[in-house]
Image (cartoon, rainbow, N blue to C red; front, side, top):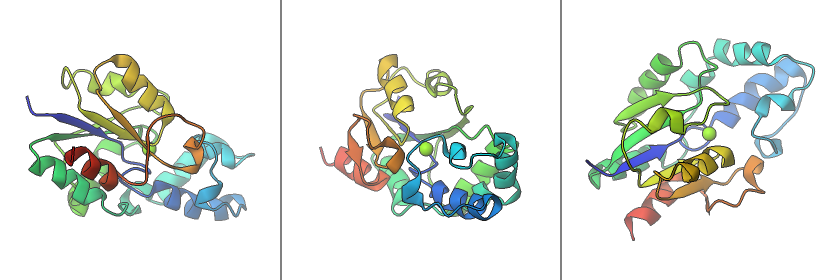
Length: 189
Ligand SMILES: [Mg+2]
């Protein structure tokens, strides 16, 4: 079996916080900037609004379809392919009613390379989605400390890397500036 890699989408491969604040700020009368989001639970930054209402606003405004890839992320997926690895995209986008089809179309349109896409629930351990894919994974990259802790606890992920964001400033996982930076460092070993 080829070496397996697990990459997150939102705020690792795709600039979702940019879409979130642009869509929700005017709706909720806030002026948050991306660097203000000190919690991974973004929607709590908009108190007084029900989460289903905010999620529906993100769906209606086509947040998934219109978010921009983060710099170097597309290239990072192709570097893994060229090195003989497989890319598993695992994303907690279950909040969107058509998460799989919208995400798959987006990844193809933007030129990402990926072998598999798995969509999980927001509060669900991501390992439930990838543990059946392969017995062992080389590396997982995410911005959520809990998903990385879950990965290490499974014992089937050899190494984790965390993309630094305001909401994970206190977490202890190895910190990196970008997915491309992680992949280049991994491949240069
Ligand atoms: Mg993420």
